[in-house]
Length: 113
Length: 111
Image (cartoon, rainbow over all chains, first blue to last red; front, side, top):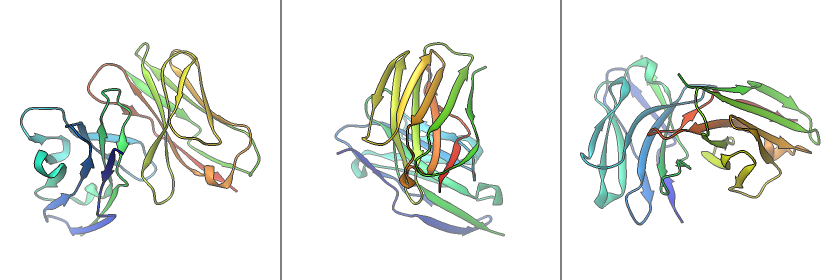
């Protein structure tokens, strides 16, 4: 069955430190790939997406993600974290082109001042 | 521009009571509409999907139902709530661009 794994439930980093959030998917082909951020009690905001082409994609708020086909991964990175980045991050895939997302369980990011 | 509205923002309901959550989209026509649920300690799970008025696809068996009485209105319902229905419910729409857009969500607590 298709699935998305975010192995880190919680991550804590210091402000200014670099960040990498992991995402692996299980699917026979390359799906559409997304990263969303959710602030407490809020809906989801798209950070970036990958459909095809250049495997390093740039998003909003200084985030980037790299698609690695050999590892079925789509890890999210930021070189310098800001306190306002504290939120929950969700990786999602769309395997059918219908935007019926399969989400990972999310990674909650805490930023230390 | 397109916007999506969900209400209410929070809801506390007793077990066995009915439920109605509403989602409306503005600024687009014939969108695909989705209901997701985020239960405590779990990720977001797709509950229902609709490509048009009266066309509902249920993605998981459950105590809930969905209806789409108008093109841009999507309603999530239950006749009798269970404790396990508690969670954060998100409505989303897709209209031919390259992402789905999410509402602000409804926090449902069943007591």
